[in-house]
Image (cartoon, rainbow, N blue to C red):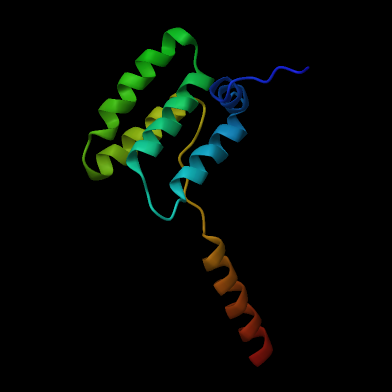
Length: 112
């Protein structure tokens, strides 16, 4: 009989892949109803996966500090924190905006 990993261990193992970790954070950030505690939990999972056990505590302390900062200061601090983990905070065009742009381009090509 196969033994399965406990969920937390499985998750951390998956998050060791930086691409998976980035998608994990992206999924949390794209939730329709944002939950700050869920974001903090996801970021702590990523820190645990991408740092050594010795570094994890330090990264979690910095995470708590940055999440308590106001407004844009928190955003810039999060970007710096993610960079330390080998990740990058980016902004992309939403799928909805891409579709709208495609429809506009198609309409302008038809009327020309």
